[in-house]
Length: 466
Figure 1 (cartoon, rainbow, N blue to C red):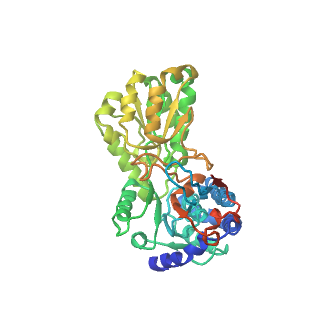
Figure 2 (figure 1 turned 90 degrees about the vertical axis):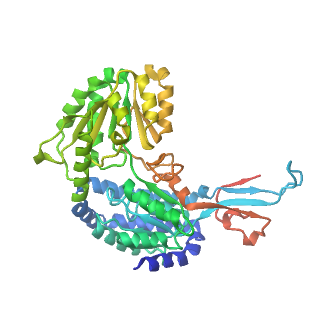
Figure 3 (figure 1 turned 30 degrees about the vertical axis):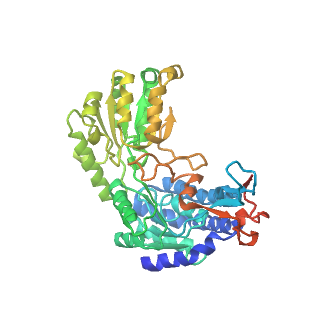
């Protein structure tokens, strides 16, 4: 299918899908989840062949993908995302007579999803972007990631067999096809998970169209973590082990990988020892492996950087650990705070905790930031905590960021350049908000209003009536 055919079919399907009753739309999402789980053995085997991530990890990810679809089906049935507001006429309204006004959020139209490489199920063909767009009432065209093409095609076949209406889903392949689809006038929004370089290039295309569209790009970050002196003194061994485990989870190929750690110098030996015990793991593909080695080598050669864990050439993909002091980091903050996709950690040592506030404030936008401290230190942490929250979308207390729970309150997004749209999330039920737009109806007859705004409320959605 060509990009034009895929988008044109999505345009034709959009009104009917957006108007589909909640029970019908939710049933379709659930049917896709059931179909994926029914094909689990075949899909996981394909994913393992193409991604090298291992069957245990991939089985868990497929379970997460099916759960996401069912969670969004529940949201469709609940209907709160419509945000239906009804203002009854009021002749005595303070600013003058108030008309009958009814506002709700409705689907924006066809959505283009660029699949990610590092989550071949959860952020790919049937992943969170697709599920949230479907739930919002939007048909989806997915541009497959070249890192797992056979899995993408087979997943698309499984989806097609689940009985979705024509035009509600299509798969396209190739960089040129993705760009062509992004420029198609029928596409109303796009979502992307991947590199900063690729995301920014696509964001420019979306912004430079004759009719610009929202582009929701999640582009990763170094996810700074701060260890206070109190935490370092109380839990040095625990922190070292947990940091090493989080840094190397999935061969460091998570967008929430804690690549930057601010800590007292006394933690260095323990972290280096724990990291040195962890063997290297295969990365997603040779291009990503080469990118990791290049980025690690570049950072390892910067002024003021020390190589604490640096393997021989024969152990190329084993984890690496670098260190520098706070003064050197401040002098080279742009280069030192660039993301390296893989198991590379940079520990920045400091002497006074108060000196970190200004440095953290100068960091680029992040997906996450973590603070490891003791309860008795909280009275001195308000300024640092505020700065961490100001630079990131999710702040963690005595936890590591590599687990991203699919739930209602999750925020997976952050200030630029972590994302192109810091007010949105790509994980959790709030992800639907990216693909909705508000429409107000003034003085309309009941039979012409959309179901969420009618007095008889046929979809039984929550209504705020005033």
